[in-house]
Length: 95
Length: 464
Image 1 (cartoon, rainbow over the protein chains, first blue to last red):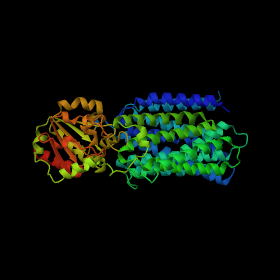
Image 2 (image 1 turned 30 degrees about the horizontal axis):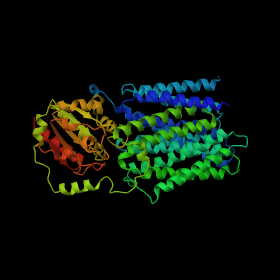
Image 3 (image 1 turned 30 degrees about the vertical axis):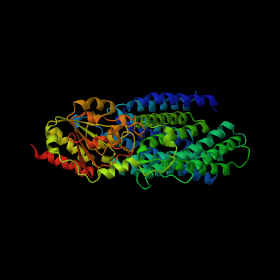
Image 4 (image 1 turned 90 degrees about the vertical axis):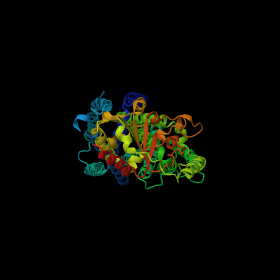
């Protein structure tokens, strides 16, 4: 088990680095940025897979599979739709 | 460090690099692909590391989710993007909620206080994200009334629910009562209600802020789940999303000159939504007057530099294709055309940009607030399409009104302005726009934006 202070340090560091990098994204791309981040929050899929694999009760297992479905819709739908949006941004020459 | 940790760090770096590449439209597609590959890496790593390869039911879950995701992403139109993002956000929160529930279910008497607390907190934040996002999606999709819905005793109920949440978090952290399942279901129910109450009272114009905040919460929920199950990847990636949502929330609040606190708290009284008493009087006095009959064709013809200002009205009328055509014809006639985009125009951050990109407008013509405001003084003609509060010069002068101090697009600095709005009513903020009374240099074209923009395009076509 990783000690809790390491986990909290990782949390704080990721927040700080994320804050710095995301702040540089221009308002032009805020919608795709948001849907991309949104898809990223589906990272809970890993938690869902691990917890479901360990689940012994049927009830828990069903909960887990629902969680997998929800997280997967979030991830796949989010990235595809971001891709669709980003591909629409073009420069003048190609028009 | 074991192999799992090393791969986790590699994935985190990959995701960060992907986000960094999102800072320019040229590299953003690669950035998004990199982030997606990172998450694919997470899934593969979990499947191999967690010994899941042989578990059929999990694969079925993955396949079903993927299928739904693909269908949703392919069917959605650009106008519907805000509600899709809100919906997907809710699903992410829902997943965190269910995982937290399972983690709590698997706790033993030896589980540490910290693990118990984080699991309960993840349950609560996930539930709030789920119900809040679904209400927001309903409002954006116009299935739920978009104007603020305020229940009797809204604030008091919210405070009681918050107190209940705090108490349950405390009890669940203690892990002593032996009633964890019942308590956690209760916590889930209360948190779901909190999410509903927290978003119901928010009006349409504050949606860009709400959706940003919910985005942040979904990341936070994932990060707290990570803390509960001691997973570095979940913690780091969740925290990054949380930070991103916060940045967008701050940018939106600044652009509207609103304080987050005011948005999160229901207003004391329910006025006529979007229309203050003085504004209503103003509308009554004005509504019988016809717009001044100035020849808009002459304005269009003589202008050399044109700035188009789109707003929520363009999205509502789905007029972006018409606007794209207008831009094309103006350019054919040798005019210099750019678009001025206010950060909160539309229903989510950056909404106007994707609509105009969809209509084939190259992104180097899309100017942000600061760039735009350097242009208006040298602009012959501004064409406003369904925007109101973001061009309301009362924001500079009308002290005490909701928009006072809000940064606006200074379209009144341009020589002439054509406003294609639905009616003369003030925008969401309910403050009369002095521009409407500036005869001589301002022309109002009232009606559906698709038709009025088409009218302008047709007029322009006549002159070769």
